[in-house]
Image (tube, rainbow, N blue to C red; front, top):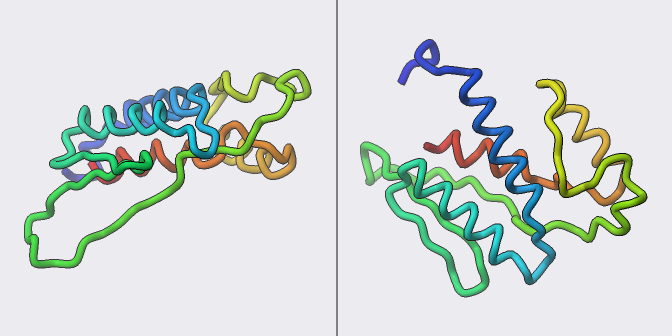
Length: 134
């Protein structure tokens, strides 16, 4: 697919929607089953060739290239997040994301670094990588 054929508004909307679903899904360390299932379902929906989880909840997705003799490209991230603490201390509930503008990505990165306990923590990365690979 050429870059000219990509519907960038649709791509952004899909990434924002999936990021919001990821943020709404609590995933404390050791309790990532729900978010792992969400990611696995999304990879299947996108048509990954293989999707599986291991015994501790890690999610793996594989898309075969045209030439399987070539080395693989691996993208990874983590699914858990730190405790958000008392949601009343946040300017907005950390597990109820709102998308305001495309500048949201840079602003959230800055906010998450200063707030200390980001609800977002890597959620945007997961959302973009799952679509990039597909």
